[in-house]
Length: 266
Image: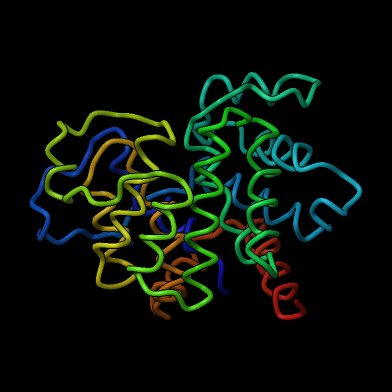
């Protein structure tokens, strides 16, 4: 199965979210041995489910799928404001600029047939909750990076395009980022460029996730975002794919399999 990059990053980073990795940048991590799927994975699957059922052309809004999946997995680690939105009866957004919009956006970049469609889908997927300009921007930047990577763009091209289109500074040194005392920050403004930088400095799929975790802070989400771009650029190694398939909940698998089938027809 493809399209699991965000879920794998989330799983690998989850054990470091509140107890960040303290080793050196070159130190080995046992990424696939222990972890769990958190809100990053649940809501990515929700976006897939929405797209499986027609996306913007379907019968129900993206908010319905986000709310239903969050209610199905109520202890996955959602932010307080998002939990309040889930519990409400309304689809009114919460003006968030948190990284939730970017962590769940990857299916939009695969579903889209054009960059314009990619950016529109990313906007729709974000603004139901994250309608703050920075929340929408973060989702669109990650969606565009994935779309460019899956379209064959090189890292220099991805970096330059994202910098020009979204104004992020992607020139920061990885070691410099890691020296920021591993403070926890879940905003798009901080974590989106850091996740992209982790990908840009990586050698392969797992290396992107490893660097994202080493950065510290909101490790599961930064790794989920970096993993989603890395999958589009490198692909997922078969041994990683097989390992993760065994860990996926059955309802996740059903949605991902359907999404894979749908992508073969687009």
